[in-house]
Image (cartoon, rainbow, N blue to C red; front, side, top):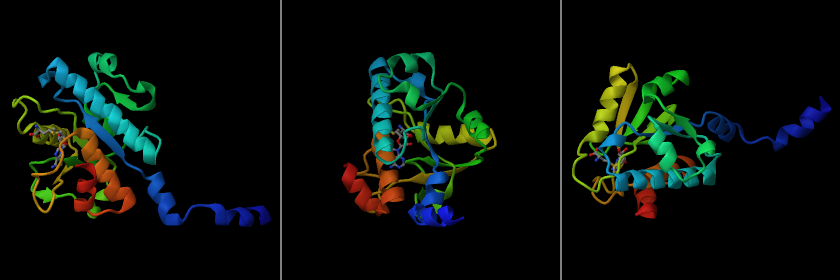
Amino acid sequence: LCMMEKFEPVLMPEELRSKLLEWPYFIIDLYHWNKHTQKEKGKVCLQVSQSYGLLRDYFTGRELAVTWANDEFERMFKGPIDRITLYAGPTAEFLRENDIDEVVLLDPWAEEVLSEKDFDVGAFIIGGIVDTGGNKKKTTPKIGEELEKAGIKVRRRKIVLKGDVVGVPDRINRILGIILKMMVEGKSMDEAVYEFQ
Ligand code: SAM
């Protein structure tokens, strides 16, 4: 008992500890993989690697999950494949296996802006989409529709700068970085966006 008392003070503050234990998944959803050119697929892979790097700054990197990850992705991905969570099947299945029934989908077309109230979900989903051609307009909401069809509750949320999506970088890793700055460092959305511009 004496030992336990002695060790108690070195534990993290309760709030921080519970936050760490309930750390959500950050899912990059490759549902639209085949709409990309080879060059764009390469960019998706690079942005996934960079996302891993960002998460490593705060946590282990395992919180990064890539869903619909097919063989071609695995071949093209040059990052540490065994240090992230890969899932070859649908995102909804991955969520169910992890007992997650509600998610935040980062979606530039959403009505509502992401806020602190959204930080309690089990997973954040970012579309594994790179736009260089103009053939992928409104593909993010499609990811949400697929999840809803499978029975997942989806909060569609946008990131804005001074109220507008214009000026917000749309690279996958930068969107992740903005969420992390807000969630972990407690920065305002505008501050977080400025840091990733
Ligand atoms: N062409 C896609 C569309 O029209 O839906 C946008 C793809 S964007 C390059 C890649 C991903 O970053 C999106 O799927 C979304 O998850 C996220 N994203 C980009 N800008 C965002 C914003 N302003 N707010 C929330 N999420 C955003």
